Amino acid sequence: MEEVKITRKLLDSYKKLKRELPVLEYELNELWMTDKGMGNSVILNGKSGSKKPETVVGFDCEKYNRRKKTLAKKKKQVAVIEKWIDDIPDGQTRCVFKMFYRDGMTWEKIAAKTGYSQSPDYPRLHIRDAYLKKCGIK
Image (cartoon, rainbow, N blue to C red; front, side):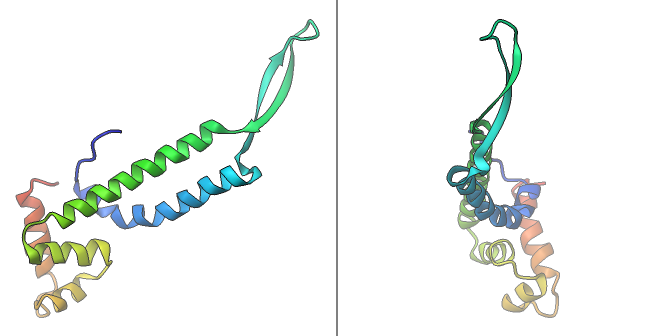
């Protein structure tokens, strides 16, 4: 599997990725356990001398494997983002990233919790954006 590189776009998609994981797991389970995983193909059967189209029904492995691969990729992206946030050396910066990305808090709530309630943009501009710029993340 390819290397996951932290980008601003990837960080911004973190919440969406987290919401998609249970949905993909549910879909995989449905494909495997129910007839939703069944598909059909048309083949040319030449048993009787002339080739005639025939429908063949069976488990759709390609669809199942695509979903499985997508789930694995998204799980890896989530794990890389979480590890990256956990590895931020500065405690306040790490806390701001956790509150915004993992906990889904608004910048106003983060500002209040970090003591910048008079300036709700401070955590976003001077902590998060400054750290991203320092790391060269665009």
